[in-house]
Amino acid sequence: MSKVLLLKQNYVLIMYEIRRFIMKIKISVLVLLLGFGIISFILLNNSEKTPKDTTIYKTKFGIYNGEASLLAQVAKEKGYFKEENLDIELKPYPSGYHAMTGMLNGEVDYANCAEYVASKYSFSNPNFKILASMATADISSALAKTSKNINNAQDMKDKRIGTTIGTATEYYTGVFLDYNKVDLKDVILVDVHPSKRMEVFEKDEVDVLFTWEPTTYKLQKKYKEEIKIFPMPLGFEFYFLIVSDTKFHEKNPIISLKILKSLYKAQNYVRENPNEIRRFIKDYFDFDEEYTDYIIKKHAYELTFPYVLSSVLNNQFKWLQKNKLVEGKAVKLDTLFDTSILKKIDESSVTILE
Image (cartoon, rainbow, N blue to C red; front, side, top):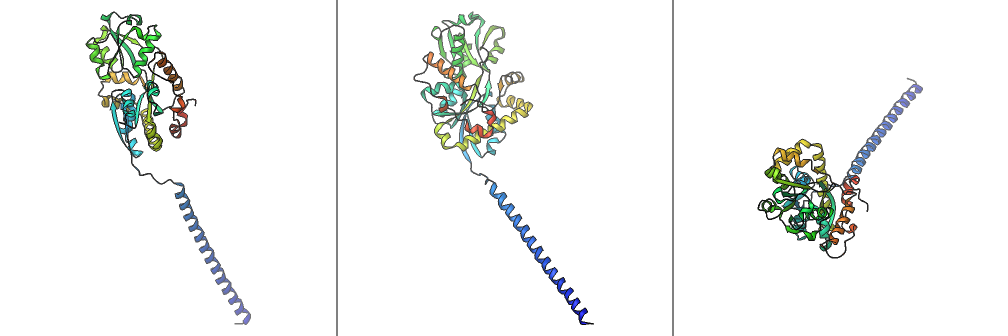
């Protein structure tokens, strides 16, 4: 074999080994780069995730023991509070007024009540924040037996008027009389506990009873033609508010957020499952079929901070002051409102002007 041929063969072998070496380097670099990319992706992805909050938040929510509190009851039954790591006690009260009183007395951290309850308490004990409305309802009316010969509002003068002081019914009583040119001073107001409404009406301890459902339904069904119902003026629906003790709320905004998140989930469930909700209401409150269909039509279950709330509260402030049922000046509404929590969940639900 000639030296030239041998040199060529050696050159080819050397170049082959060099190419193999370079290829190994390229593969190693590629593997390193790929591994670095995967590791970087994992680290970056993990850095963007918020660590799961495993803290259990304990709180008490005072609710009206009726249909207006449906979202809270659904949130409890469907586990939405639990999903938000809330160990929550729903404490039932006979009215929103009693729930609000319980909250201001330290029995619970949150309460739901008609907006009038918040209006009246804001003069004497404004240590609360309004976080949202969880329902609207048109369920108030006045009733009298036909034997009382009370055929219109004018016939109510000098009569015993049963109402529930401190609740929205007190306001509806006064505005109904005002609307019909009857002064509060011209009637005898009788404070009736919600649990005693049927009893005082049947025992003739009042001549007219201002009340809310299901009392109206029960009395109408029992007395039929013997009873006269006076409906409230058009547009007299109330807003069922979620309120919190100011100190508790400011110290625990995360609990307020988790409660509203749970109620928001319940709202969506109610919207998407009307038949299931009908069965839930019937079974939960032990209603008959007829009343269940009747009462569902009178409620709207929405988590909102509605545009009209300011004007409603301001009108109630004026009425309370006009009738000297409160002392002092009305508070500024922005000191009562905290819309920031609901905005974090659904900004479109907050339409109130601030």
